[in-house]
Length: 450
Image (cartoon, rainbow, N blue to C red):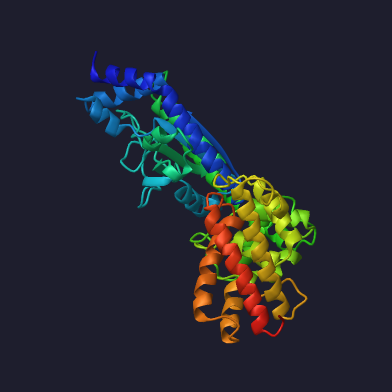
């Protein structure tokens, strides 16, 4: 047996591993994209054994393989995930979600940097979804008028933090993620199968011309999709009727924050699905209910996502709102959400961990209620918590040392409320709850309310 047969036999034995790796990456990306309000069709596959063999033999004819290790370095798409975006204008944000969900090792953009219009099929600038060069031909070929395949590819590992018990072996699987519009993915399938896997000889110049024409139609379709996205943005921005789903809420936030010169391609919306479910239960899933809070957002969106900041501003010391938000969090699509609690009361129910969580949340709600009273406002739209904390120091209601500790506990609170604190030690939560109760009494006493 040659090195190609050895590699293919090894891959056939490991097929289930690569298939499971692809499905695992797909599930993580599907959840993260949906939670961020990005519409996409996410699919996965392990490379077909027969297609792998054909690909290796074709490549070996140009440059013979000498070892299995050489093949392993050359073939990086044994496990693949395809992200087909409804709106190509969301490519940058989709890339951000991919990078925050997976450990990206390498990336590539198509078409490559530099002009591609007018380059003929068979030139170095022309590649398909796999990055392969088209077969050479002695006949004249059509000169492309359009840019061809437009996408971004990422070779990534699944982070250890995303793996569950017994899944450590999947951390070594390199997964290729291909991101393009739904139209571009469809065109690339047709183009790749016809040009690079011909069953009845090479294509004629007229067939290449038709593929080029179809590519032009796809590019025009992508422009139409971008216009459709903008039309939807305009509709949800001015409408007083409720958002129909979290995708519309996400579009509203992108549109409104963009008008405030916020570049969300370098930031994050966070778990918009949780925010939408919370707003829907509160009958507040409308533009008029959300917009007043936007000017209160801090601009550290990488550390504090938009959705989390909005939720924090809306909760403002109201236990029933916390209950509603925790219920929304319990059904989140996001892969980082491991929580199953539904109310503050249920947090207090059974296990020591749940009891400590409930105790901590209740103590925090009491502190927020006091801050609201001290602000002498009947409105829910209070300044962000960091502003209120600084006001406490300025009024000498707390010491600088207490201010520092309060900010540390706020970070713990953010992890707990937004689904990342399920593994926080119960002792730490109980200690923080006791400290918050003491601080609340201190503030009341210093403010002459005790």
